[in-house]
Length: 513
Image (cartoon, rainbow, N blue to C red; front, side, top):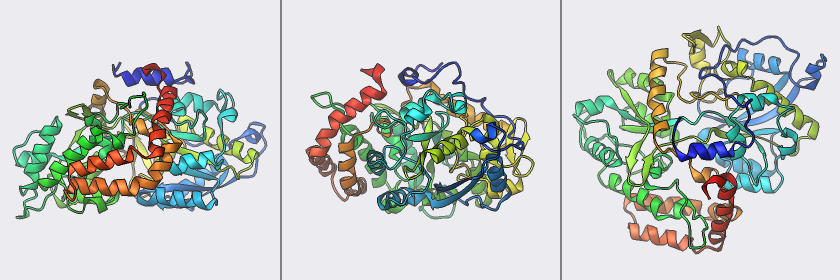
């Protein structure tokens, strides 16, 4: 049993949990799909309802499942739906989501990737989504939600104490830092365990020729606050003199993170154009051998290693779940869910209930492999208890495959690769389980909510990002960056957010007061 205080926090939050809240086995069983009469009350009464016609919106990382594919047609038949999805590239998803919300022309259901995003909180306040709290109740009408999902997610995804989202639940193990082990070996460097050691390794790589192309052109990485900032204490509440909680970005802890990245940049370990490089481009830089380190979901270790070996035989990756820092650990400890599905208030009550029935039916653990890997015997086969993608599955099943759906919780959902052999996945599991042995903490401001901060952040986010990039690149001094933080701390909306964040903290983490 892990001893992190967050474990006790999350346990205390599980007001919905009961003896029935067991999550599925580490690897859910076969997803054999049997003929049914569709989901919902009509099916239970033995009467076939007309298909539930749904318009959805979801983020796209790679290639979207085709609506006329065997999988999609099987899914629609199994759950008695006619489901069309507007697929939006992941790098632009939040912007498109904001535009859709501003237009008021919402699809029936939409994937929300950040429940605390200002536009989402504003949409909730404006009544854009159904408040599902009363309908969900004690889950007696939706038993799969209770039996097969992470119960903490239903608590941590609330807004103002209410459930507006069906959380896309999962385990707490997710992303890690990957580093080129073959380059470390070539340069006689040890795998770093601390931020200081990592900084040294990145600087050596930046001034060496690990890829052997005869040029000093290799970079270390692109800044990733979601992983590194935690080492400087950003996941602990920082309070003002009145007990309010100061937004993470405006704390001295965050400035320390910026200083760390500034030092890496000054030594050439961060590319000059880093502020313009999106997530997809970062991965491409890593898998083409231009960068030494990259933060990604643990399950990508295998496929990125395979991709690297196509052009760089002998390429090998090492997974680093955490690095020790001055005020904690650089790491990612998942909330137990990634966003959720919101139901538009334009949908009438009867259809809202059918949508909940659809997702509740899909959450049965027997469908886990179906929703995540496709049709057994076509897209994947079971080998040693693990789904293994077929050649067709490798083409069709990817990061976006399950984006428009809700499915049961599996502890290692973001750790196991469907491309890797069992022994590889078991090793990755053990490496990631190291997070259970440290004081791993969730990102506070992915949970805490403040209308005043949403107003302030929507006004200053672009400016803040620009100032942060300038501070890292040396275009402005750290004193100037800190002065900018202090300026924002005098903004009336920001000042009001301190008390609102404290109230939200008391609601979500009562045992810590």
